[in-house]
Image (cartoon, rainbow, N blue to C red; front, side, top):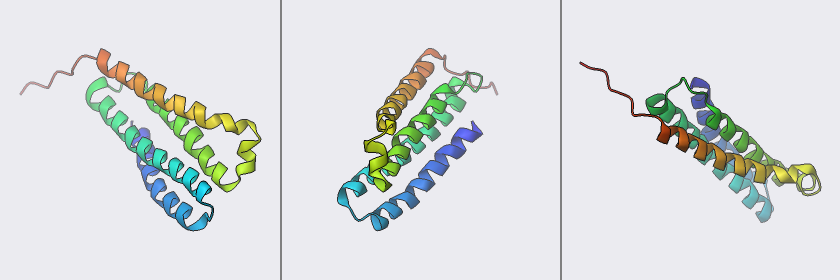
Length: 131
């Protein structure tokens, strides 16, 4: 769980720096838009990773494997990472196999959220300790 919290915090912090970079270093408005979408998803899914880790700790239990969190990290890397790369070197993505990475990343993010939902709904509420 500590790793997932750390990755979530890193994603949020990184999104701030990457947003500034995209705004000031990219001149083309289309490339800036792609970059901004990558930043937005990096930030939002980083916060989501924190939510998943806290939910697992408070409700689901750390005994179950954190596959939803792992899949979310993979989805973030595929989706946002390739959008960043596409903003810097568009030709690499448009003409190569990496053009499939953002949709696969997006589907991975959706699967991770649905998976954590199933884990949440199928787990009984933890019993508070007796005083």
